[in-house]
Image (cartoon, rainbow, N blue to C red):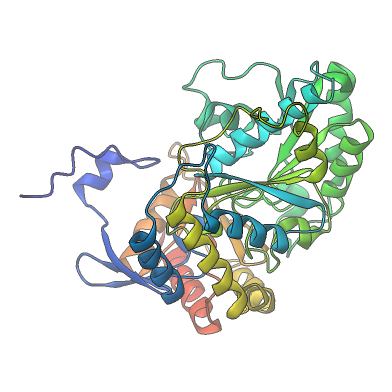
Amino acid sequence: MQNDLSAFWMPFTANRQFKQAPRMFVGAENMHYRTADNRLVLDGTAGLWCCNAGHKRPKIVEAIKAQVDELDYAPAFQMGHPKAFELATRVRDLAPDPFEHVFFTNSGSESVETALKLALAYHRAKGHGERTRLIGRERGYHGVNFGGISVGGIVTNRKMFGSLLTGVDHLPATHLPEQNAFTRGQPEHGANLADELERIIALHGAETIAAVIVEPVAGSTGVLIPPKGYLERLRAITAKHGILLIFDEVITGFGRLGAPFAADYFGVMPDMITTAKGLTNGVVPMGAVLTTAEIHDAFMTGPEHMIELFHGYTYSGNPIASAAGIATLETYQEEGLFEHANALAPYWEDALHSLKGLPHVKDLRNLGLIGAIELESIEGEPTKRAFSAFLKAYDKGLLIRTTGDIIALSPPLIISKAQIDEIFDTLAGILKELA
Protein backbone atom coordinates (compact mmCIF):
# COMPACT_ATOMS: atom_id res chain seq x y z
CA MET A 1 0.00 0.00 0.00
CA GLN A 2 1.37 3.39 -0.98
CA ASN A 3 2.17 5.67 1.98
CA ASP A 4 -0.48 8.40 1.77
CA LEU A 5 0.84 11.61 3.33
CA SER A 6 -2.55 13.32 3.53
CA ALA A 7 -3.84 11.64 6.71
CA PHE A 8 -1.16 12.96 9.11
CA TRP A 9 -1.77 16.60 10.08
CA MET A 10 1.75 17.49 11.12
CA PRO A 11 2.47 19.74 14.12
CA PHE A 12 4.27 23.10 13.77
CA THR A 13 4.85 22.32 10.07
CA ALA A 14 4.13 23.95 6.74
CA ASN A 15 2.06 20.90 5.78
CA ARG A 16 1.43 21.80 2.14
CA GLN A 17 5.09 22.60 1.47
CA PHE A 18 6.30 19.45 3.24
CA LYS A 19 3.97 17.09 1.41
CA GLN A 20 5.08 18.43 -1.96
CA ALA A 21 8.72 17.56 -1.15
CA PRO A 22 8.84 15.35 1.97
CA ARG A 23 11.92 15.21 4.19
CA MET A 24 11.82 11.73 5.71
CA PHE A 25 14.14 10.25 8.31
CA VAL A 26 14.22 6.46 8.40
CA GLY A 27 17.14 5.79 10.74
CA ALA A 28 19.49 7.39 13.25
CA GLU A 29 22.68 6.60 15.16
CA ASN A 30 24.87 8.73 17.39
CA MET A 31 25.15 12.19 15.75
CA HIS A 32 23.38 11.43 12.47
CA TYR A 33 19.98 10.80 10.94
CA ARG A 34 19.61 8.68 7.80
CA THR A 35 17.14 9.85 5.17
CA ALA A 36 14.81 7.87 2.94
CA ASP A 37 17.25 8.42 0.07
CA ASN A 38 20.10 7.02 2.22
CA ARG A 39 21.91 10.27 3.05
CA LEU A 40 23.40 11.04 6.45
CA VAL A 41 22.25 14.28 8.11
CA LEU A 42 24.23 15.68 11.02
CA ASP A 43 21.86 16.43 13.91
CA GLY A 44 22.45 20.05 14.90
CA THR A 45 19.35 20.22 17.11
CA ALA A 46 19.34 17.00 19.18
CA GLY A 47 16.06 16.14 17.45
CA LEU A 48 13.85 18.79 19.04
CA TRP A 49 16.24 19.75 21.87
CA CYS A 50 15.70 16.27 23.33
CA CYS A 51 18.22 13.64 22.14
CA ASN A 52 20.98 14.90 24.42
CA ALA A 53 22.90 11.61 24.39
CA GLY A 54 22.58 11.17 20.63
CA HIS A 55 20.67 8.47 18.81
CA LYS A 56 20.35 4.68 19.13
CA ARG A 57 22.40 4.59 22.33
CA PRO A 58 22.89 0.93 23.32
CA LYS A 59 22.08 1.14 27.04
CA ILE A 60 18.81 2.96 26.37
CA VAL A 61 17.77 0.63 23.55
CA GLU A 62 18.47 -2.48 25.62
CA ALA A 63 16.65 -1.11 28.66
CA ILE A 64 13.51 -0.48 26.63
CA LYS A 65 13.62 -3.95 25.04
CA ALA A 66 14.04 -5.62 28.40
CA GLN A 67 11.23 -3.59 30.00
CA VAL A 68 8.72 -4.40 27.25
CA ASP A 69 9.47 -8.08 27.81
CA GLU A 70 9.02 -7.77 31.59
CA LEU A 71 6.21 -5.24 32.23
CA ASP A 72 4.63 -3.19 29.49
CA TYR A 73 2.20 -1.06 31.53
CA ALA A 74 1.16 -0.59 35.14
CA PRO A 75 -1.44 1.85 36.48
CA ALA A 76 -0.08 4.83 38.39
CA PHE A 77 -3.26 5.48 40.38
CA GLN A 78 -3.16 3.60 43.70
CA MET A 79 -0.60 1.17 42.23
CA GLY A 80 3.08 1.33 41.38
CA HIS A 81 6.06 -0.43 39.86
CA PRO A 82 9.70 -0.28 41.03
CA LYS A 83 11.28 1.55 38.13
CA ALA A 84 9.15 4.68 38.52
CA PHE A 85 10.37 4.99 42.12
CA GLU A 86 13.94 4.27 41.09
CA LEU A 87 13.88 6.93 38.39
CA ALA A 88 12.33 9.48 40.74
CA THR A 89 15.10 8.83 43.26
CA ARG A 90 17.78 9.21 40.60
CA VAL A 91 16.29 12.47 39.35
CA ARG A 92 16.06 13.76 42.92
CA ASP A 93 19.70 12.83 43.56
CA LEU A 94 20.79 14.61 40.36
CA ALA A 95 18.82 17.75 41.17
CA PRO A 96 20.07 20.56 43.43
CA ASP A 97 19.50 20.20 47.18
CA PRO A 98 16.15 22.00 47.58
CA PHE A 99 14.36 19.49 45.34
CA GLU A 100 13.06 16.38 47.07
CA HIS A 101 10.06 15.16 45.07
CA VAL A 102 9.27 14.25 41.44
CA PHE A 103 5.85 14.18 39.76
CA PHE A 104 5.90 12.37 36.41
CA THR A 105 4.12 13.61 33.28
CA ASN A 106 4.35 12.74 29.58
CA SER A 107 5.69 15.95 28.04
CA GLY A 108 6.96 19.44 28.69
CA SER A 109 3.49 20.85 28.10
CA GLU A 110 2.06 18.55 30.77
CA SER A 111 4.90 19.40 33.14
CA VAL A 112 4.02 23.08 32.84
CA GLU A 113 0.31 22.43 33.40
CA THR A 114 1.19 20.35 36.44
CA ALA A 115 3.48 23.02 37.91
CA LEU A 116 0.88 25.75 37.42
CA LYS A 117 -1.81 23.62 39.07
CA LEU A 118 0.53 22.74 41.92
CA ALA A 119 1.24 26.43 42.48
CA LEU A 120 -2.47 27.27 42.73
CA ALA A 121 -3.24 24.27 44.90
CA TYR A 122 -0.24 24.89 47.17
CA HIS A 123 -1.40 28.38 48.06
CA ARG A 124 -4.91 27.12 48.69
CA ALA A 125 -3.57 24.36 50.92
CA LYS A 126 -1.67 27.00 52.87
CA GLY A 127 -4.81 29.06 53.37
CA HIS A 128 -4.11 31.60 50.61
CA GLY A 129 -6.69 30.65 48.01
CA GLU A 130 -6.80 34.26 46.80
CA ARG A 131 -3.42 33.73 45.15
CA THR A 132 -4.64 32.74 41.68
CA ARG A 133 -2.75 35.04 39.32
CA LEU A 134 0.03 33.58 37.13
CA ILE A 135 2.87 35.60 35.61
CA GLY A 136 4.73 34.56 32.47
CA ARG A 137 6.99 36.47 30.12
CA GLU A 138 6.72 37.90 26.62
CA ARG A 139 8.36 35.58 24.06
CA GLY A 140 8.22 32.75 26.58
CA TYR A 141 7.38 29.22 25.46
CA HIS A 142 5.75 26.85 27.92
CA GLY A 143 4.18 24.23 25.69
CA VAL A 144 0.85 24.18 23.92
CA ASN A 145 -1.82 23.40 26.52
CA PHE A 146 -4.09 26.19 27.75
CA GLY A 147 -2.07 27.00 30.84
CA GLY A 148 1.18 26.95 28.91
CA ILE A 149 0.06 29.21 26.10
CA SER A 150 -1.61 31.54 28.61
CA VAL A 151 1.63 32.18 30.50
CA GLY A 152 3.60 31.86 27.26
CA GLY A 153 4.33 34.92 25.21
CA ILE A 154 4.80 33.86 21.58
CA VAL A 155 2.04 35.64 19.69
CA THR A 156 1.61 33.07 16.92
CA ASN A 157 1.03 30.33 19.51
CA ARG A 158 -1.70 32.37 21.26
CA LYS A 159 -3.70 34.41 18.81
CA MET A 160 -5.94 31.69 17.34
CA PHE A 161 -7.17 30.23 20.62
CA GLY A 162 -9.47 32.72 22.27
CA SER A 163 -9.09 34.46 25.62
CA LEU A 164 -7.08 31.64 27.26
CA LEU A 165 -6.76 31.66 31.06
CA THR A 166 -7.80 34.80 32.88
CA GLY A 167 -5.69 36.40 35.58
CA VAL A 168 -2.41 36.10 33.68
CA ASP A 169 0.13 38.87 33.19
CA HIS A 170 3.53 39.00 31.48
CA LEU A 171 6.97 40.33 32.20
CA PRO A 172 8.82 41.95 29.27
CA ALA A 173 11.21 39.82 27.22
CA THR A 174 14.89 40.18 28.01
CA HIS A 175 16.00 40.68 24.41
CA LEU A 176 17.82 44.02 23.99
CA PRO A 177 19.45 43.83 20.55
CA GLU A 178 20.61 47.45 20.52
CA GLN A 179 22.65 46.93 23.69
CA ASN A 180 23.52 43.23 23.68
CA ALA A 181 24.01 42.16 20.05
CA PHE A 182 26.83 39.63 19.47
CA THR A 183 27.31 39.02 23.19
CA ARG A 184 29.26 35.92 24.15
CA GLY A 185 27.36 34.21 26.96
CA GLN A 186 25.25 36.27 29.34
CA PRO A 187 24.65 39.87 28.25
CA GLU A 188 25.64 42.77 30.46
CA HIS A 189 22.44 44.79 30.05
CA GLY A 190 18.90 43.97 31.15
CA ALA A 191 18.92 42.76 34.75
CA ASN A 192 16.64 45.70 35.54
CA LEU A 193 13.89 44.12 33.43
CA ALA A 194 13.22 41.79 36.36
CA ASP A 195 12.10 44.86 38.32
CA GLU A 196 9.01 44.98 36.10
CA LEU A 197 7.70 42.26 38.39
CA GLU A 198 7.48 44.86 41.16
CA ARG A 199 5.28 46.98 38.90
CA ILE A 200 2.97 44.01 38.23
CA ILE A 201 2.85 43.26 41.95
CA ALA A 202 1.96 46.87 42.71
CA LEU A 203 -0.84 46.72 40.11
CA HIS A 204 -2.46 43.48 41.25
CA GLY A 205 -1.25 43.03 44.85
CA ALA A 206 1.23 40.37 45.88
CA GLU A 207 -1.52 38.57 47.77
CA THR A 208 -3.22 37.71 44.44
CA ILE A 209 -0.17 36.21 42.67
CA ALA A 210 0.55 32.48 42.87
CA ALA A 211 3.61 32.01 40.67
CA VAL A 212 6.02 33.38 38.12
CA ILE A 213 7.21 31.00 35.40
CA VAL A 214 10.19 31.66 33.11
CA GLU A 215 12.64 29.70 31.02
CA PRO A 216 16.12 30.33 32.46
CA VAL A 217 17.24 30.42 28.81
CA ALA A 218 14.35 31.06 26.43
CA GLY A 219 14.80 28.42 23.74
CA SER A 220 11.96 28.06 21.26
CA THR A 221 11.61 31.81 20.74
CA GLY A 222 15.15 31.95 19.38
CA VAL A 223 17.63 31.47 22.25
CA LEU A 224 17.37 34.52 24.52
CA ILE A 225 20.10 34.43 27.16
CA PRO A 226 19.28 35.93 30.59
CA PRO A 227 21.20 39.13 31.38
CA LYS A 228 23.66 38.95 34.25
CA GLY A 229 21.80 39.32 37.53
CA TYR A 230 18.32 38.96 36.00
CA LEU A 231 17.39 35.55 37.41
CA GLU A 232 18.84 36.51 40.78
CA ARG A 233 16.56 39.57 40.90
CA LEU A 234 13.50 37.51 39.96
CA ARG A 235 14.28 35.08 42.76
CA ALA A 236 14.72 37.88 45.30
CA ILE A 237 11.47 39.62 44.33
CA THR A 238 9.37 36.46 44.32
CA ALA A 239 10.79 35.34 47.66
CA LYS A 240 10.11 38.75 49.22
CA HIS A 241 6.43 38.60 48.23
CA GLY A 242 5.74 34.91 48.89
CA ILE A 243 5.34 34.14 45.17
CA LEU A 244 6.49 30.78 43.82
CA LEU A 245 9.16 30.80 41.10
CA ILE A 246 9.00 28.07 38.44
CA PHE A 247 11.91 27.40 36.08
CA ASP A 248 10.81 25.80 32.81
CA GLU A 249 13.83 23.59 32.14
CA VAL A 250 12.30 21.38 29.49
CA ILE A 251 15.18 22.47 27.23
CA THR A 252 17.92 23.40 29.71
CA GLY A 253 17.52 20.35 31.93
CA PHE A 254 19.87 17.37 31.68
CA GLY A 255 23.11 18.90 30.52
CA ARG A 256 22.31 21.46 27.85
CA LEU A 257 24.34 24.12 29.67
CA GLY A 258 27.03 21.71 30.85
CA ALA A 259 25.34 21.24 34.24
CA PRO A 260 22.46 19.00 35.33
CA PHE A 261 20.02 21.93 35.38
CA ALA A 262 20.10 25.65 34.65
CA ALA A 263 19.39 26.17 38.35
CA ASP A 264 22.81 24.62 39.00
CA TYR A 265 24.48 26.61 36.23
CA PHE A 266 23.17 29.99 37.42
CA GLY A 267 23.14 29.15 41.12
CA VAL A 268 19.52 30.32 41.40
CA MET A 269 17.04 27.98 43.04
CA PRO A 270 13.35 28.21 42.09
CA ASP A 271 10.51 26.45 43.90
CA MET A 272 9.71 24.08 41.02
CA ILE A 273 11.49 22.87 37.90
CA THR A 274 9.64 21.51 34.87
CA THR A 275 11.46 18.96 32.71
CA ALA A 276 10.91 16.54 29.81
CA LYS A 277 12.95 16.03 26.58
CA GLY A 278 16.39 15.02 27.90
CA LEU A 279 14.88 12.99 30.74
CA THR A 280 14.51 9.97 28.42
CA ASN A 281 16.74 11.26 25.61
CA GLY A 282 13.56 11.84 23.61
CA VAL A 283 13.17 8.10 23.03
CA VAL A 284 9.90 7.64 24.99
CA PRO A 285 7.65 10.58 25.90
CA MET A 286 8.09 11.57 29.55
CA GLY A 287 8.28 14.69 31.67
CA ALA A 288 8.64 15.51 35.33
CA VAL A 289 8.08 18.33 37.80
CA LEU A 290 10.62 18.69 40.58
CA THR A 291 9.36 20.27 43.80
CA THR A 292 10.75 21.18 47.18
CA ALA A 293 9.67 19.40 50.34
CA GLU A 294 7.83 22.59 51.35
CA ILE A 295 5.46 22.29 48.37
CA HIS A 296 5.02 18.52 48.60
CA ASP A 297 4.42 18.48 52.35
CA ALA A 298 1.70 21.13 52.15
CA PHE A 299 -0.51 18.47 50.55
CA MET A 300 0.33 15.66 52.98
CA THR A 301 -2.44 16.48 55.46
CA GLY A 302 -5.79 14.97 56.36
CA PRO A 303 -6.65 11.25 56.64
CA GLU A 304 -3.98 8.97 55.20
CA HIS A 305 -6.45 6.97 53.12
CA MET A 306 -7.52 10.10 51.18
CA ILE A 307 -6.02 11.17 47.85
CA GLU A 308 -3.93 14.28 48.52
CA LEU A 309 -3.78 15.69 44.96
CA PHE A 310 -6.50 15.16 42.34
CA HIS A 311 -4.18 15.37 39.37
CA GLY A 312 -2.24 12.92 37.22
CA TYR A 313 -2.03 11.05 33.93
CA THR A 314 -2.70 7.53 32.73
CA TYR A 315 0.94 7.28 31.71
CA SER A 316 2.58 8.99 34.72
CA GLY A 317 5.73 6.99 35.45
CA ASN A 318 5.06 4.57 32.58
CA PRO A 319 7.29 1.47 32.97
CA ILE A 320 8.91 1.72 29.54
CA ALA A 321 9.51 5.47 29.91
CA SER A 322 10.94 4.87 33.39
CA ALA A 323 13.34 2.26 32.06
CA ALA A 324 14.40 4.65 29.31
CA GLY A 325 14.91 7.42 31.87
CA ILE A 326 17.10 5.29 34.13
CA ALA A 327 19.25 4.19 31.20
CA THR A 328 19.48 7.76 29.93
CA LEU A 329 20.71 9.10 33.28
CA GLU A 330 23.23 6.25 33.46
CA THR A 331 24.47 7.10 29.95
CA TYR A 332 24.94 10.75 30.89
CA GLN A 333 26.91 9.78 33.99
CA GLU A 334 29.00 6.92 32.58
CA GLU A 335 30.07 8.93 29.52
CA GLY A 336 30.52 12.21 31.41
CA LEU A 337 28.32 14.01 28.91
CA PHE A 338 27.52 17.04 31.08
CA GLU A 339 31.23 17.55 31.68
CA HIS A 340 31.93 17.03 27.98
CA ALA A 341 29.37 19.70 27.08
CA ASN A 342 30.87 22.10 29.60
CA ALA A 343 34.37 21.55 28.22
CA LEU A 344 33.22 22.07 24.63
CA ALA A 345 31.21 25.24 25.34
CA PRO A 346 34.10 27.69 24.66
CA TYR A 347 34.92 25.96 21.36
CA TRP A 348 31.22 26.07 20.42
CA GLU A 349 31.09 29.77 21.28
CA ASP A 350 34.12 30.60 19.12
CA ALA A 351 32.74 28.60 16.19
CA LEU A 352 29.34 30.31 16.40
CA HIS A 353 30.83 33.80 16.60
CA SER A 354 33.06 33.12 13.61
CA LEU A 355 29.91 33.80 11.55
CA LYS A 356 29.90 37.49 12.55
CA GLY A 357 30.13 39.68 9.48
CA LEU A 358 28.64 37.15 7.07
CA PRO A 359 25.67 38.24 4.91
CA HIS A 360 22.35 38.84 6.71
CA VAL A 361 23.68 38.01 10.21
CA LYS A 362 22.28 40.60 12.66
CA ASP A 363 23.01 38.83 15.96
CA LEU A 364 24.68 35.76 17.46
CA ARG A 365 23.83 34.34 20.90
CA ASN A 366 25.16 31.38 22.87
CA LEU A 367 25.32 29.64 26.23
CA GLY A 368 26.47 26.09 26.93
CA LEU A 369 25.77 24.02 23.83
CA ILE A 370 23.00 26.32 22.60
CA GLY A 371 23.40 28.85 19.81
CA ALA A 372 21.31 31.22 17.74
CA ILE A 373 21.95 33.03 14.48
CA GLU A 374 19.48 35.86 13.94
CA LEU A 375 19.08 36.89 10.32
CA GLU A 376 17.79 40.05 8.71
CA SER A 377 14.27 39.41 7.43
CA ILE A 378 13.32 39.75 3.80
CA GLU A 379 11.05 42.77 3.56
CA GLY A 380 7.45 41.64 3.38
CA GLU A 381 8.37 37.96 3.74
CA PRO A 382 9.20 37.25 7.39
CA THR A 383 10.61 33.78 8.20
CA LYS A 384 11.44 33.06 4.54
CA ARG A 385 15.20 33.67 4.77
CA ALA A 386 15.70 31.34 7.73
CA PHE A 387 13.41 28.70 6.21
CA SER A 388 15.48 28.85 3.02
CA ALA A 389 18.58 28.25 5.15
CA PHE A 390 16.83 25.27 6.78
CA LEU A 391 16.10 23.70 3.40
CA LYS A 392 19.62 24.32 2.10
CA ALA A 393 21.12 22.85 5.27
CA TYR A 394 19.02 19.70 4.91
CA ASP A 395 20.20 19.30 1.32
CA LYS A 396 23.80 19.68 2.51
CA GLY A 397 23.42 17.09 5.27
CA LEU A 398 22.74 19.26 8.33
CA LEU A 399 19.63 19.53 10.49
CA ILE A 400 18.98 22.97 11.98
CA ARG A 401 15.88 24.50 13.56
CA THR A 402 14.35 27.85 12.70
CA THR A 403 11.93 30.11 14.53
CA GLY A 404 10.98 33.26 12.72
CA ASP A 405 14.21 34.38 11.04
CA ILE A 406 16.39 32.84 13.74
CA ILE A 407 18.43 29.66 13.32
CA ALA A 408 18.58 27.74 16.61
CA LEU A 409 21.21 25.08 17.33
CA SER A 410 21.41 22.55 20.18
CA PRO A 411 23.40 19.45 19.18
CA PRO A 412 23.59 16.19 21.10
CA LEU A 413 26.09 16.43 23.95
CA ILE A 414 28.26 13.73 22.35
CA ILE A 415 29.32 16.15 19.59
CA SER A 416 33.02 16.44 18.68
CA LYS A 417 35.06 19.50 17.75
CA ALA A 418 35.24 18.22 14.16
CA GLN A 419 31.45 18.03 14.03
CA ILE A 420 31.15 21.54 15.46
CA ASP A 421 33.44 22.70 12.67
CA GLU A 422 31.24 20.86 10.15
CA ILE A 423 28.10 22.59 11.41
CA PHE A 424 29.50 26.10 11.20
CA ASP A 425 31.45 25.57 7.98
CA THR A 426 28.22 24.37 6.37
CA LEU A 427 26.26 27.32 7.76
CA ALA A 428 28.91 29.81 6.63
CA GLY A 429 28.57 28.52 3.09
CA ILE A 430 24.79 28.68 3.24
CA LEU A 431 24.76 32.24 4.57
CA LYS A 432 26.93 33.33 1.64
CA GLU A 433 24.42 31.76 -0.76
CA LEU A 434 21.22 33.20 0.72
CA ALA A 435 19.33 35.87 -1.15
